[in-house]
Amino acid sequence: MSNPLTPTPGDRPVLVAGGISDSHTWNLVYLQLLIEEHGHRVVNLGPCVPEDLLIGEALAHDPALVVVSSVNGHGYHDGMRTVTRLRETPGLGGVPVVIGGKLGIAGPCGDEEAAALRAAGYDAVFGDTADGIAAFRRMLEALPQRALV
Image 1 (cartoon, rainbow, N blue to C red):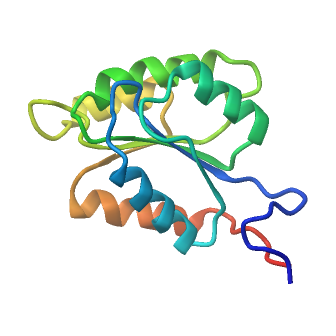
Image 2: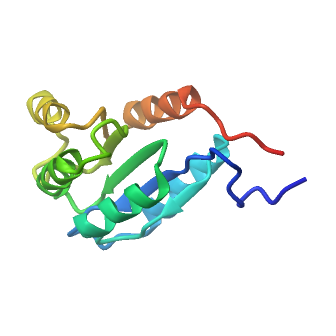
Image 3: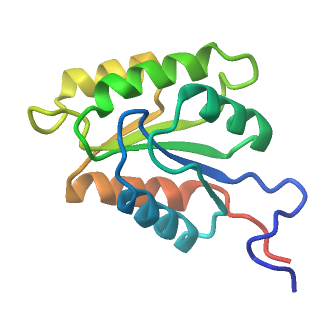
């Protein structure tokens, strides 16, 4: 049996990244464990991820999914800039990208902000609520799992 952390041919990891201004790490650890629990390999880029680093890693890993997380409340503004840069990059236009967490400093992200994030290029927006986490779990269950040899 192979090491579960070793990529197999065709294995596409899930990239996890904190927003460019977000220095929190426990949310990223939680996401990594949650995603791995659902059978996916994770490349965790850590907090304060610059767009150039995220783009470079996405090009290098050909991820099944990119997850951008925010705890500091600046997720909406940071996320708009990040997804715009990702979607402008040749080869990344079709990569699924989601964002979640505390996306606004004034409270939960409203329907208008979530719609704007989706219009900018996110495939899904998850709030920092029990409903948001449940929806994220359902999305993970629908992702093709990696083959364990």
